[in-house]
Image (tube, rainbow, N blue to C red; front, side, top):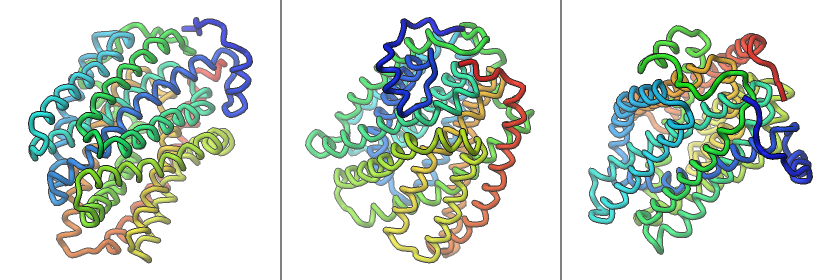
Length: 431
């Protein structure tokens, strides 16, 4: 495909170019991708603190069960998604994914209005949001890897991710400001509206493309081909291990955060507000890094360096937490680590998929981002419960995570080397 959009205003192009390395013909597609991710993460970050509160209502000691239930839900959802993309072109299956989740949210809104204190419903919503988050974000990055080339990804994905971060700032602001006066349940309607705006961006972005492939045919392969392709590819298996190391360390921190906030605050709306403010702080730091650091770092040091930054931060953070296992240390580590992931490691990870065949971009990537990710959550959830059951304190669990993070760091460098080799065989930067 080629860029068939109308001529882009040069003054606006120059303005964007002051912050982002946008080349001729890219500005319109960049802004649509930016807006798409803005709407998507705004919708999710309205739901995230509500989900975290539902986890508290369901009982923090039951979180490992919720993580396991999420993994099982992923096992059911991935074949359905594989069936969809194997039979319909992206212009049809992309909007269908977001319409489906919008309809789900409307059902939850009605059920919570009828029985807002239902513990079983709270647990179901926790699992649903955990599935929703990974699916819609995975589909977003698959779509971008199908439109932009590898060279464009290194230059633009960090800045496009900043659109998501800006949306992730708006979501917590809305939740923090409106959760108490309106009630958390009514915010679901705002999330639905934002998802529908994302669909408009999808349709407009579909008129752009910088690859020679034909995007309007269904993705090749069967319902389970995403899993089989992943296990056949050493490159994809390395990425899967990277994701597993990330989920293992993330789950340890998440469980500790849930227990700390539950112990510190008794009021449900107040806990929701605190979760939202934590998210807002993380996203401010992330936005600054994405606009000022990410693109320059990957252009200068390569994708491998972007991948390695997160495990390096994680090893240092857990070592610090073991030395000073205080509440502020934990929350500070959580915030900085999430910022490093969203700002640098995640865009770098998405660039990896510009160097693989189209079927792997949609199917294997989705399997990796959902089943593998939530499988790692489930395993690490039970591992955390087991370590706590053995009597390990926060300090002890932090010490266990340090060597895990160092192995993860070495693996990141290996993935970066493999990516450089594969990218030489793919289409160059045509912009």
